[in-house]
Image (cartoon, rainbow, N blue to C red; front, top):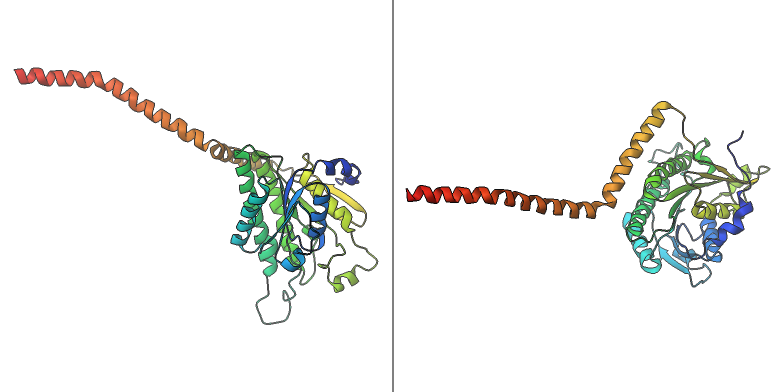
Length: 328
């Protein structure tokens, strides 16, 4: 039996209605799929911070009372830190973080030029996503500590190249999207313990500006994925509380899902169980750090009091002994 489950969009209307009142951050929001996602979230009643490095394009997003725009360079940690601080200010609680910003191919890679290849693609597509997810988990922990958490989720933008080999210069792009897939699996494991979800949307080529003319030529007769089902996949990935560790695949046939899977190997299972035990311990220490400190302090005070209470009679006897010795 195939692991693909088709037609998730059949329940989309019901799911979209649950988005109302939720708060989301979207990077790479000025163009393409990110722009479409922002519009869909707003239409469903969410409040959105749309972030991008291209402020000119970002400022052309249709005005909406629940839309906030912010400049971000995802390859710079301080820039992303300011984005999350801004989001906290204008939205308060953070329910969904879409690490969507990305760039395309590195044409110098495997070329005959005697120069260092431009690997900005790794800075944006890998390092930038690591920064986004790091700050997202931090925000989720803060919300949970304040009892504000509402099924938070991280959604990563992967690609069909998260699974496929690619020739020549697209290889760094494929490598970056393989990394995104691996990161999603790791974060979903952490989320099992900490109470957040993580999924990845991995679309086939869609007719956006990111698809170069040469690639469109290669796709002649094959076709591209429509933008609408890709955007819907993002919404489902972020707000269907039953899904974590899943990959959403969108091609020209529609929307499918690869459920959370694991290598059925004894050593892999044993390692995962041991690793999860460590995560549980770390989470408990983080969650109960203040109570533990208070308890530790109380135990220390109690210990001192008990010691003094025990020692006083003994000290009194010693003092009496000295007095008696002095009288002699």
